[in-house]
Amino acid sequence: MERIIALRSAGLGLDPKGSIALAPHHPRWKRAAADEAYEIFDALRLESLRLYHVGSTSVPGLPAKPVLDLLGAVGNLREYEAREAALSAIGYENRGEYGIPGRRYSVLKDELGHSFVHLHVFQTGDPQIARHLNFRDHLRHSESARDAYARKKAEIAASGLKGNDYAAAKNEIVKQIDEEARHRNKPPRVLVILGAAEGGQQTKAFAEASYGAGELERVDLARCKLPQFRYGQEANADPEFLALIEKMLAADLVVFATPVYWYSMGSHMKLFFDRLTDLLSGPYKQLGERLASKKMRLLATGAGPRLPLGFEAPFAQTAIYLGMDYLGADYRPAI
Image 1 (cartoon, rainbow, N blue to C red):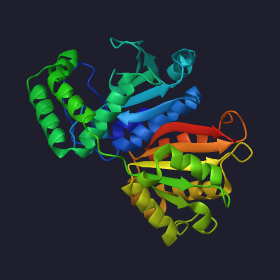
Image 2 (cartoon, rainbow, N blue to C red):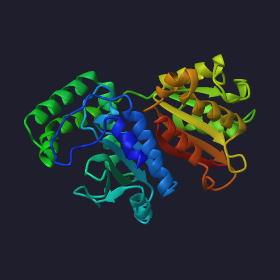
Image 3 (tube, one colour):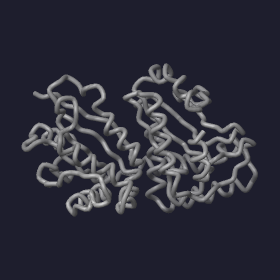
Image 4 (cartoon, rainbow, N blue to C red):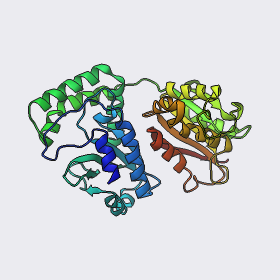
């Protein structure tokens, strides 16, 4: 299986005998996680599915067991379970709750039993989702927490503990970091990127009502005058576009705000997304890779009572491709 070969080449593969050997952080882990998330999303075709890279492999600078942890949130667990055959078809072994109520746990292994991906899926709103994301984000932002966790993991691994015993030995420090993460009350820096035609007053009003005019920076793509996109190494050389990417990197949350135009995003937003997804190739590849782990959300307005079926797919898939966290959509029907 080509996917297993790619995962193995990124230094992944957990010993089936249960022995714990921590590996230094590998820069290819975030790309490997994004690629595998795409495979899962494409196989399941479940619009409500959100996938996030969590666990130690998602934290730069943190040694980890060489296995990816992917966290899934889904609107309805029964709909997810109905698609488990599709998950099995791409190599995953389904193990049910596996000791954690409300979880659906699956593992991707090779023919020798080496584990490459642990997939943990919960129903949207389950407290475990926020706990895993907060734990990861705290380790990413707190050097002291990251160092303490790394020392404890190394100590436990050196003791020879395996499998569940290794996990149990981390309980105390995990609880400590969970508690620290719960008390991180720093207000998020929010960047709203508006992709409406000239005007877009309802979408602007919805953004300000959702986040508060004093808490956000707003960029109106209709006023940016980005040139038409063309494929090629110079496509993203426009200074205004590059400045906007730097704003995204400085924000804690990027909100893409667009009206629904005949079942799809507006033309200004589409032009921006064409440029955005092209950032992972050419001379600005390193800039695009820095978007990994940034959080994004969709905010939309429209004439219908709900978002059209499939409207979120370009946003969710773009997040997966760039390694960003897609947090879902807020929708307001036209008044």
